Length: 474
Image (cartoon, rainbow, N blue to C red; front, side, top):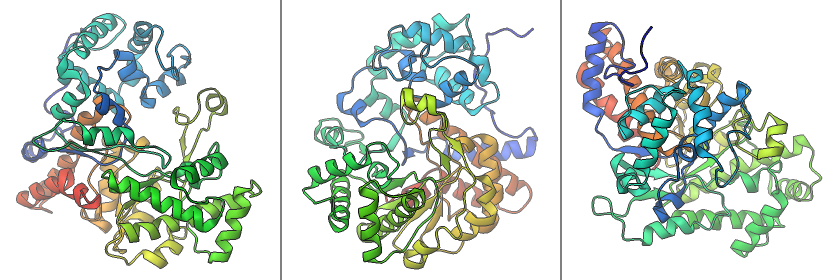
């Protein structure tokens, strides 16, 4: 039987077994492995960097924020109560860590395992595989190092080689933490670190979002606009976008259940708004309102230059008991089939030919890659394709994406990679996986004499660094 002691990560991980393509992939990877990281969309917290306080313990750092981890554990009958999900301060972090370690075998073959092993090895120097037997060793080593200056959030930001890190923020957020970072003496390479907010208006544009009416009232309070009227509501949203831009924001993000858009007249939109705000809208009217708001957000992006991201196709909070106990975003979101061609038509009729407008489309529905998304992005000047997202951000998912979209959309109607994570320490690992897989795909094209190697080097650099900066106006 193999022992538990081994190198957690191999230098040739993810590269093809064929020696010719593996050699090409290695050479391409060496050209890009040291490029700075651009993280244009994610869910880390600006407060970490504003306060620069030590992360409290391994369980709080790795287990509690990462739905990839506790979703898998929950699927095997481990209660979220035992993992202390949803509590501010963990009562027994070592116990939580031991539960995680004892069930680490559940992550065999998953991208989560790769991300975690990368962090354990590269950041903490651990070479033994995590298990019940090594749980306390891991906990003690990680805890000790989290107490040192080199593991403070700002030090890790610099160590990771981050050039840009975008958070995701409600229009109701004061952005005080972002302001504190800008006003601090912290400099990276002589400049203020680019930790930027992203405008995520779901809480005030989705009538099904919990506390929607109260959120509109709060929006009116923070902007001084009358958000009980359609025109006042739109003015308030535009003002918040201006505030976000002043803090460095370059993008918006929209987590709608579908990609449906609409083009209503002013009177139609105003009447629909009145009905929805009064709580009298049925399911179809709520969906129409969300559709209209995507078009309104596109109009505002044409005006203010913010890149627009659309993340549809997730059945949010599918497990009602978990949602009622723990609230939103606790790993019970399930992919759904998503239609884009007809759904986006009203918005594209208005803004699809605007060369200065950028709209990035993501999907959880891989069946749309070659049928809908690649042809759309391969035609409309405003459209770009986001990388495999969430359930598909795996080596296999990344390869399927390249195989299905490149033939129609090419490389240059895509936007590189974003990590979309709450787990700060997984950021370098996720980017490393994406860079390796892109090199695998490019190596195949070179080996098949479909691309010269110097061209593959240029594409690899673009996918790792240049395209994301362009798409997000960074």
